[in-house]
Amino acid sequence: MEVAGFSIIEVVVRIVWLLLIPINGILALVFFLGALFVEHQIADNVKKRLGFFHFSSPDSLVFLGLVIFTISEVVGASLWLSQGSLVALIVGSTVEHYVARNVGQISEWASFCHGDLHPILTISH
Image (cartoon, rainbow, N blue to C red; front, side, top):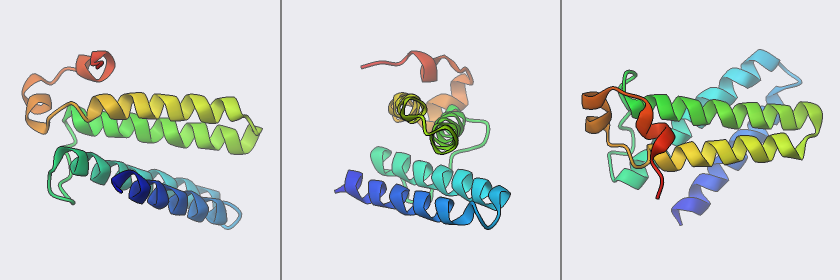
């Protein structure tokens, strides 16, 4: 149920993004980045059973991971749209899901205490 819910939210975000592009490209990009970041933060909270609107500290590894996979999704989607490249969409989505899986394994407390970037890049199960 959670996967379906978040998938629907991402589809709605992408539709709004596509509708905003002809109106104002910069507004569309800002909306896409912001909406996906918030959706990714909430999805991470649900996985970790945190409060729905618990936002990670900007100096935590969780926050950094959320930023990285949000940007990778936006870049992949933008390249897919501009180039018609399915490869760009697949690569962006793969990077996003790889980092998302690893971010899901990092606790806010652990990232605050250790302050190093290696867990995002090296955790695998």
